[in-house]
Image (cartoon, rainbow, N blue to C red; front, top):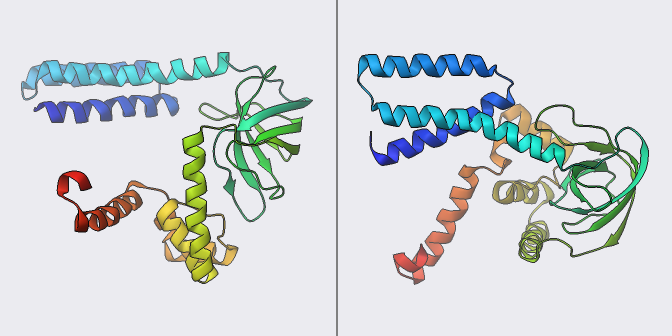
Length: 249
C-alpha cells in the first residue's frame, strides 16, 4: 500500500467513523467489526498491518471527534428553549431562498450564545452579515447534528456588514453575476444557469422544480464537485489561452 493509498483510505475511514456516529451505530459493534478486520489482516497477511491499524484508529477517532464536537457545541449554547424570548444575532451564512420563506443561520449575540436556524418570510430581504433582532420561540434540536430552530419569529434588521468582509464581497459578486443571468436570459433559463454555476435556487418556480424532479435532473443544480469542476475547467481554459500552465494553475 502506497503512502497516497494509505492517506486516502485513512481519510475515508475517518469520515466513515463520523458517519457511523451520526447514524447512532453502537460503538461496541464498531469495535467488534474492527477487531475482526484486523484479525483477518493478520491471518491473511495480504495487507500492511501497521497501515490497517492506523486506518482502524482513524475510524474510531472519527467517532470520538463527532461526539466531542457535539458536546462542545452543546456546552457552548446558552439558549432558552420553548419560551417566547427576544434575541439578536448575525446572519452567519447566506440565506437560502424558497418560494415562500427564507432559511438562515443566526449566530446569537450575548447574553445568548450558539447558532440557531430561522425560517422567516421573504420580506425583508436578509443578507449575509446582517444583524437581526427577533422575538419568538426557539425549539431545541430535533436530533444529533441538527440546530435549534425558530419558525417565523418577528424580526427586524438592525445592522449590516458584520460578517467576514471577504466572504461578504464574494457573496455580493455572486449575486451580481446571477443578476446578469436574469438580465439577458429568460427566467427559467437564468434560474437553471444560476443553479448549475452557484447552486442558487432562489428564482426557481414551482413548475420548473416539478419538471426537473420528473425528469430526474434536480441533482444538476446542487452545488457539487461536478459543478465546481466545470467552473474550474472553464476558468483554466480562459487563463490557459493567455498564460503559462504554472500561472494558470
